[in-house]
Length: 387
Image: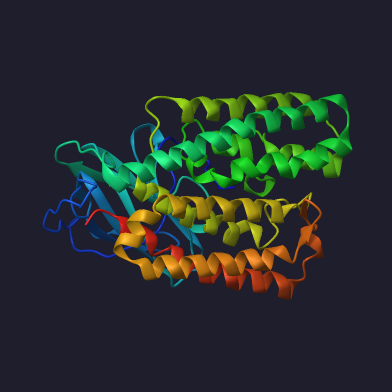
């Protein structure tokens, strides 16, 4: 899950990293082979615990690239927001001393906002970013369109499965069958965890309503969603408002279903590749540590779902990747296989062992494997971006 205090929005997945000049410096325009966009503009971002300094505040419509360097002491995130707090792109889990790249398609002229989030909380340190030029279309033909269409079908299939799974989970809660509800908690979540970068992009704080952790609550914020129900099931027992919280979860996942089914819902190949990285960031930031499902210790279900979602996202853009850098595709496959093999050690029946049974050395082994995978997947977005 991701912390989106007063954000969240339509558009998409995210993540990766870059380099740049003084103003959003434009490289010579170049049409991609099939994507039809211009070459990325590049902007450097110097992030610290109390500053977010961009080398430029202007860009052109099409692909824009931000290279973020964390010079602070806290893990940070970087976002690009559109109108109505729409998340156009993001990159998480930028540890002190690290550099990450984000490539984002800004298809309409206008004023956007950038934000660094030291500690990965709050609204962030924001600046306006002005985009000029004619409106552009992306992923309208060839392999790029095929990638976008394929991933959109996947997102819809996961949401179509999510709604009845959550309804069954909620029915168990409301009937008072706590053991059945506990059994359905991790299995109902997997559909959401596979596509979470897309869910995080919708407005009206949809992702926090569905998946906010107690540790990420802000003063006065109402806590709803999976993790509130998780605590009710494993720690406190049903509360006076448990059934109402359960009903709200059903309403929220149906809102997500309506959003991804809408005619204007789209996700482009750049976002898809960024989302593949974002799902691995999810594992690195909360699954490995055990923070995600802190009451139920069902983290490995989420871990596996994030991994599956990332693998499917990469598979969607694989024809482009294989055309441009087949060796990277081979390395990505190898790293996915290594992580999957590690996860198999923790299988138990149709699910996984409780995460509190996974020792610290074993968690570190998983973490190293995810880091190795992430290193390869982080390159995919740059390879498939318009050239």
